[in-house]
Length: 253
Ligand SMILES: Nc1ncnc2c1ncn2[C@@H]1O[C@H](COP(=O)(O)OP(=O)(O)OP(=O)(O)O)[C@@H](O)[C@H]1O
Ligand SMILES: [Mg+2]
Image (cartoon, rainbow, N blue to C red; front, side, top):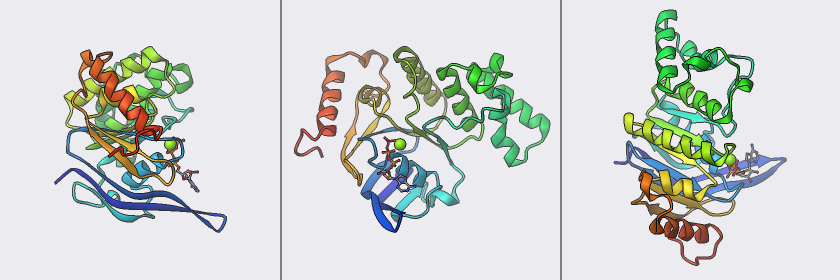
Protein backbone atom coordinates (compact mmCIF):
# COMPACT_ATOMS: atom_id res chain seq x y z
CA UNK A 1 0.00 0.00 0.00
CA UNK A 2 1.19 3.54 -0.75
CA UNK A 3 2.34 5.68 2.15
CA UNK A 4 0.05 8.47 1.09
CA UNK A 5 -3.33 7.63 -0.33
CA UNK A 6 -6.17 9.98 -1.20
CA UNK A 7 -9.39 8.90 -2.84
CA UNK A 8 -12.49 10.86 -3.83
CA UNK A 9 -11.44 13.86 -1.76
CA UNK A 10 -13.88 16.74 -1.75
CA UNK A 11 -13.53 20.03 0.13
CA UNK A 12 -16.02 22.89 0.22
CA UNK A 13 -15.59 26.23 1.94
CA UNK A 14 -18.63 27.92 3.43
CA UNK A 15 -18.33 31.64 3.10
CA UNK A 16 -21.11 34.20 3.67
CA UNK A 17 -23.80 31.52 3.53
CA UNK A 18 -22.50 30.29 0.19
CA UNK A 19 -20.72 27.02 -0.48
CA UNK A 20 -17.57 27.34 -2.56
CA UNK A 21 -16.23 24.05 -3.88
CA UNK A 22 -12.42 23.92 -3.59
CA UNK A 23 -11.54 20.28 -4.37
CA UNK A 24 -13.51 17.66 -6.26
CA UNK A 25 -12.84 13.94 -6.61
CA UNK A 26 -9.10 14.18 -5.93
CA UNK A 27 -7.29 10.84 -6.19
CA UNK A 28 -3.59 10.76 -5.42
CA UNK A 29 -1.10 8.24 -4.10
CA UNK A 30 2.58 8.44 -3.28
CA UNK A 31 4.92 5.63 -2.22
CA UNK A 32 6.99 6.01 0.96
CA UNK A 33 10.27 7.76 0.44
CA UNK A 34 9.38 9.40 -2.85
CA UNK A 35 8.94 12.99 -4.01
CA UNK A 36 5.64 14.21 -5.45
CA UNK A 37 5.10 17.57 -7.13
CA UNK A 38 1.75 19.32 -7.57
CA UNK A 39 1.24 21.97 -10.21
CA UNK A 40 -1.98 23.79 -10.99
CA UNK A 41 -3.51 27.22 -11.62
CA UNK A 42 -3.76 29.77 -8.84
CA UNK A 43 -6.77 29.18 -6.61
CA UNK A 44 -7.33 25.58 -7.72
CA UNK A 45 -7.05 24.16 -4.20
CA UNK A 46 -3.38 23.16 -3.84
CA UNK A 47 -2.89 24.73 -0.42
CA UNK A 48 -6.25 23.32 0.63
CA UNK A 49 -5.02 19.83 -0.27
CA UNK A 50 -1.89 20.25 1.86
CA UNK A 51 -3.88 21.57 4.80
CA UNK A 52 -6.01 18.40 4.70
CA UNK A 53 -2.88 16.22 4.61
CA UNK A 54 -1.36 18.16 7.50
CA UNK A 55 -4.49 17.48 9.56
CA UNK A 56 -5.34 21.20 9.78
CA UNK A 57 -8.50 20.93 7.72
CA UNK A 58 -10.66 18.04 8.86
CA UNK A 59 -13.80 19.21 7.14
CA UNK A 60 -13.65 17.07 4.01
CA UNK A 61 -15.35 14.16 2.28
CA UNK A 62 -13.54 11.13 0.90
CA UNK A 63 -10.62 9.13 2.22
CA UNK A 64 -7.22 10.51 3.17
CA UNK A 65 -4.70 8.12 4.69
CA UNK A 66 -1.09 8.56 5.80
CA UNK A 67 0.50 5.24 6.49
CA UNK A 68 -3.02 3.81 6.80
CA UNK A 69 -4.11 6.39 9.38
CA UNK A 70 -6.07 9.64 9.32
CA UNK A 71 -3.87 12.77 9.10
CA UNK A 72 -5.00 14.04 12.51
CA UNK A 73 -4.07 10.70 14.10
CA UNK A 74 -0.47 10.69 12.89
CA UNK A 75 2.08 13.19 14.03
CA UNK A 76 4.01 12.36 10.90
CA UNK A 77 3.48 15.32 8.61
CA UNK A 78 5.27 18.66 8.74
CA UNK A 79 3.91 21.55 6.69
CA UNK A 80 6.04 24.44 5.48
CA UNK A 81 3.75 27.31 4.58
CA UNK A 82 3.82 29.50 1.49
CA UNK A 83 5.54 32.32 3.43
CA UNK A 84 7.71 30.01 5.58
CA UNK A 85 5.82 30.86 8.80
CA UNK A 86 8.90 32.02 10.75
CA UNK A 87 8.33 34.15 13.83
CA UNK A 88 10.01 37.52 13.14
CA UNK A 89 10.68 38.30 16.82
CA UNK A 90 12.58 35.06 17.41
CA UNK A 91 16.15 34.29 16.38
CA UNK A 92 17.06 31.46 14.02
CA UNK A 93 17.94 29.31 17.04
CA UNK A 94 14.63 30.01 18.80
CA UNK A 95 12.57 29.53 15.64
CA UNK A 96 14.13 26.10 15.12
CA UNK A 97 13.72 25.24 18.81
CA UNK A 98 9.98 25.97 18.86
CA UNK A 99 8.64 22.56 17.90
CA UNK A 100 10.83 20.75 20.41
CA UNK A 101 9.75 23.06 23.22
CA UNK A 102 6.17 22.10 22.50
CA UNK A 103 7.22 18.43 22.72
CA UNK A 104 8.62 19.05 26.19
CA UNK A 105 12.22 17.82 25.75
CA UNK A 106 14.87 18.71 28.34
CA UNK A 107 17.04 21.82 27.82
CA UNK A 108 20.25 19.95 26.99
CA UNK A 109 18.50 17.50 24.69
CA UNK A 110 16.84 20.41 22.89
CA UNK A 111 20.12 22.35 22.55
CA UNK A 112 21.91 19.27 21.16
CA UNK A 113 19.23 18.68 18.55
CA UNK A 114 19.05 22.33 17.50
CA UNK A 115 22.83 22.51 17.13
CA UNK A 116 22.88 19.31 15.11
CA UNK A 117 20.20 20.39 12.65
CA UNK A 118 21.62 23.92 12.26
CA UNK A 119 25.01 22.42 11.41
CA UNK A 120 23.44 20.00 8.95
CA UNK A 121 21.70 22.82 7.12
CA UNK A 122 24.67 25.20 7.25
CA UNK A 123 22.89 27.65 9.54
CA UNK A 124 24.84 27.45 12.78
CA UNK A 125 26.77 30.67 12.21
CA UNK A 126 23.46 32.49 11.64
CA UNK A 127 21.81 31.21 14.81
CA UNK A 128 21.61 34.61 16.55
CA UNK A 129 20.07 36.44 13.62
CA UNK A 130 16.41 37.31 13.19
CA UNK A 131 14.48 36.26 10.04
CA UNK A 132 14.62 39.79 8.58
CA UNK A 133 18.44 39.60 8.72
CA UNK A 134 18.51 36.55 6.44
CA UNK A 135 18.36 36.06 2.69
CA UNK A 136 15.36 34.29 1.17
CA UNK A 137 17.30 31.03 0.73
CA UNK A 138 18.55 31.14 4.33
CA UNK A 139 15.02 31.79 5.59
CA UNK A 140 13.79 28.82 3.62
CA UNK A 141 16.49 26.64 5.17
CA UNK A 142 15.46 27.78 8.66
CA UNK A 143 11.88 26.77 7.86
CA UNK A 144 13.12 23.36 6.70
CA UNK A 145 15.28 23.00 9.84
CA UNK A 146 12.31 23.80 12.01
CA UNK A 147 10.30 21.03 10.38
CA UNK A 148 13.06 18.43 10.16
CA UNK A 149 13.97 18.72 13.83
CA UNK A 150 10.65 17.04 14.60
CA UNK A 151 11.70 14.07 12.45
CA UNK A 152 8.58 13.95 10.30
CA UNK A 153 7.94 11.13 7.86
CA UNK A 154 6.18 13.40 5.40
CA UNK A 155 7.32 16.87 4.45
CA UNK A 156 4.64 19.04 2.85
CA UNK A 157 5.91 22.21 1.20
CA UNK A 158 3.72 24.95 -0.21
CA UNK A 159 5.59 26.76 -3.01
CA UNK A 160 8.84 26.44 -1.09
CA UNK A 161 11.12 28.36 -3.43
CA UNK A 162 8.74 30.81 -5.08
CA UNK A 163 10.22 33.99 -3.64
CA UNK A 164 13.84 33.12 -4.50
CA UNK A 165 15.86 34.37 -7.44
CA UNK A 166 16.59 31.83 -10.20
CA UNK A 167 20.07 30.86 -9.02
CA UNK A 168 19.20 30.52 -5.32
CA UNK A 169 16.16 28.58 -6.37
CA UNK A 170 18.29 26.02 -8.21
CA UNK A 171 20.65 25.80 -5.24
CA UNK A 172 17.70 25.14 -2.93
CA UNK A 173 16.37 22.48 -5.31
CA UNK A 174 19.78 20.75 -5.22
CA UNK A 175 19.84 21.14 -1.45
CA UNK A 176 16.39 19.57 -1.05
CA UNK A 177 17.40 16.70 -3.29
CA UNK A 178 20.53 16.08 -1.23
CA UNK A 179 18.53 16.19 1.98
CA UNK A 180 16.01 13.73 0.55
CA UNK A 181 18.81 11.33 -0.42
CA UNK A 182 20.17 11.42 3.14
CA UNK A 183 16.82 10.80 4.82
CA UNK A 184 13.88 8.53 4.24
CA UNK A 185 11.49 11.42 3.85
CA UNK A 186 8.41 11.36 1.68
CA UNK A 187 8.01 14.83 0.20
CA UNK A 188 4.99 16.42 -1.45
CA UNK A 189 5.45 19.96 -2.69
CA UNK A 190 3.51 22.56 -4.62
CA UNK A 191 5.11 24.65 -7.29
CA UNK A 192 4.14 27.03 -10.07
CA UNK A 193 7.42 26.29 -11.76
CA UNK A 194 7.08 23.41 -14.22
CA UNK A 195 10.85 22.84 -14.57
CA UNK A 196 11.11 22.56 -10.79
CA UNK A 197 8.39 19.90 -10.82
CA UNK A 198 10.26 17.98 -13.53
CA UNK A 199 13.62 18.27 -11.78
CA UNK A 200 12.38 17.09 -8.38
CA UNK A 201 9.09 15.25 -8.79
CA UNK A 202 9.15 11.50 -9.24
CA UNK A 203 5.39 11.76 -9.57
CA UNK A 204 3.93 14.97 -10.97
CA UNK A 205 0.28 15.80 -10.43
CA UNK A 206 -1.39 18.42 -12.63
CA UNK A 207 -4.54 20.01 -11.25
CA UNK A 208 -7.45 21.63 -13.07
CA UNK A 209 -8.99 25.04 -12.43
CA UNK A 210 -11.08 25.42 -9.25
CA UNK A 211 -12.69 23.22 -8.02
CA UNK A 212 -9.43 21.38 -8.39
CA UNK A 213 -9.06 17.80 -9.41
CA UNK A 214 -6.07 15.88 -10.75
CA UNK A 215 -6.16 15.91 -14.54
CA UNK A 216 -2.83 14.27 -15.13
CA UNK A 217 -0.46 12.09 -13.15
CA UNK A 218 2.97 11.68 -14.66
CA UNK A 219 5.65 9.25 -13.50
CA UNK A 220 8.83 11.16 -14.24
CA UNK A 221 11.94 9.19 -15.24
CA UNK A 222 14.18 12.29 -15.05
CA UNK A 223 13.52 13.23 -11.41
CA UNK A 224 16.65 13.95 -9.41
CA UNK A 225 19.02 13.87 -12.39
CA UNK A 226 21.29 16.89 -12.15
CA UNK A 227 22.33 16.46 -15.76
CA UNK A 228 18.73 16.34 -17.00
CA UNK A 229 18.17 20.09 -16.72
CA UNK A 230 18.28 21.48 -20.24
CA UNK A 231 18.19 18.07 -21.97
CA UNK A 232 15.74 17.64 -24.83
CA UNK A 233 13.63 15.06 -22.98
CA UNK A 234 13.45 17.38 -19.97
CA UNK A 235 12.15 20.20 -22.18
CA UNK A 236 9.67 17.89 -23.89
CA UNK A 237 8.20 16.73 -20.59
CA UNK A 238 8.03 20.34 -19.37
CA UNK A 239 6.26 21.46 -22.55
CA UNK A 240 3.77 18.63 -22.39
CA UNK A 241 2.91 19.50 -18.77
CA UNK A 242 2.66 23.18 -19.71
CA UNK A 243 0.15 22.39 -22.48
CA UNK A 244 -1.85 20.26 -20.10
CA UNK A 245 -1.90 23.05 -17.55
CA UNK A 246 -3.07 25.55 -20.13
CA UNK A 247 -5.84 23.21 -21.23
CA UNK A 248 -4.34 22.81 -24.68
CA UNK A 249 -4.35 19.04 -24.53
CA UNK A 250 -7.86 17.67 -24.73
CA UNK A 251 -7.00 14.54 -22.80
CA UNK A 252 -4.27 15.04 -20.27
CA UNK A 253 -4.66 11.78 -18.45
N1 LIG B 1 -10.92 29.91 4.31
C1 LIG B 1 -11.48 30.00 3.10
N2 LIG B 1 -12.78 30.37 2.97
C2 LIG B 1 -13.37 30.44 1.76
N3 LIG B 1 -12.75 30.14 0.60
C3 LIG B 1 -11.44 29.78 0.67
C4 LIG B 1 -10.73 29.69 1.92
N4 LIG B 1 -9.47 29.31 1.66
C5 LIG B 1 -9.38 29.18 0.33
N5 LIG B 1 -10.56 29.45 -0.27
C6 LIG B 1 -10.87 29.37 -1.71
O1 LIG B 1 -10.65 28.01 -2.12
C7 LIG B 1 -10.01 27.96 -3.37
C8 LIG B 1 -8.69 27.19 -3.24
O2 LIG B 1 -7.78 27.94 -2.43
P1 LIG B 1 -6.28 27.48 -2.21
O3 LIG B 1 -5.64 28.44 -1.29
O4 LIG B 1 -6.28 26.06 -1.81
O5 LIG B 1 -5.70 27.62 -3.70
P2 LIG B 1 -4.21 27.44 -4.25
O6 LIG B 1 -4.30 26.47 -5.38
O7 LIG B 1 -3.28 27.12 -3.15
O8 LIG B 1 -3.90 28.91 -4.86
P3 LIG B 1 -2.47 29.68 -5.00
O9 LIG B 1 -1.76 29.00 -6.13
O10 LIG B 1 -2.90 31.06 -5.38
O11 LIG B 1 -1.77 29.61 -3.69
C9 LIG B 1 -9.84 29.41 -3.83
O12 LIG B 1 -10.89 29.71 -4.69
C10 LIG B 1 -9.94 30.22 -2.56
O13 LIG B 1 -10.48 31.50 -2.79
MG1 LIG C 1 -1.68 28.20 -2.29
